[in-house]
Image 1: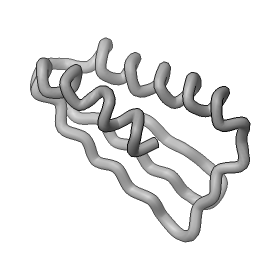
Image 2: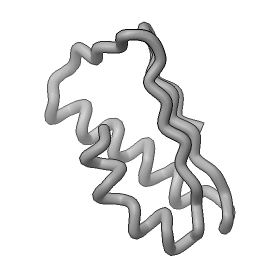
Image 3: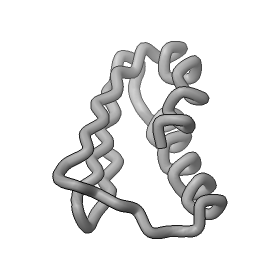
Length: 69
């Protein structure tokens, strides 16, 4: 996840979007690495694309959930 966030930092900077990334509890993601990369990348790209200038993205990874808002 941090790798994808790093890749998209320039896109966020162009719209001056702040990012709040929280990992709660001891979270483990059990998923196919390639598929998860595609899904999370798409979620974050859409959050950037449809966000306002000077907007905010919040990512919360909890024990049983991942929230991107």
